[in-house]
Length: 146
Image 1 (spheres, rainbow, N blue to C red):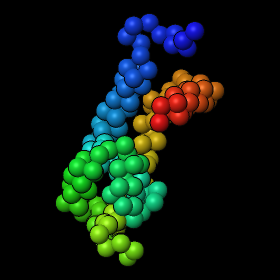
Image 2 (image 1 turned 90 degrees about the vertical axis):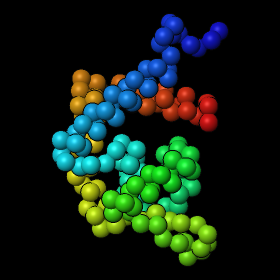
Image 3 (image 1 turned 30 degrees about the vertical axis):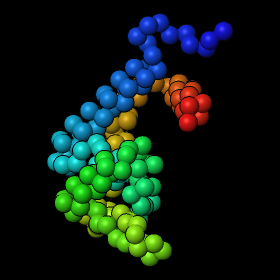
């Protein structure tokens, strides 16, 4: 017997996509109110660089689930606003590493604070147990399909 107990229109992608879009829109709004002029897509790249600076463009593709042209464009735009620089890898000069500038590093604390505030807004009224179940279910779905 199939494990899909959703009615038409209640597909996982619809539910998770709607929630993800709503969180992204709120985060963008909160960034704008704080006079931080970065897009959600740029934020996702910066987030991974804050976790580990000096990733290759391919590693950023993998981490953000974006294709190479998208990452190239995002990195180009982040370079224009002086948040990152490209540096040749010492191990393989054909590979560029993306490193945060001082300005990019300085944004981390304020952006993470805004992101945490946004997530708290999104999860208002949701219990810790419900969050853990949702994370577990979505991780299982991901593992089944990766």
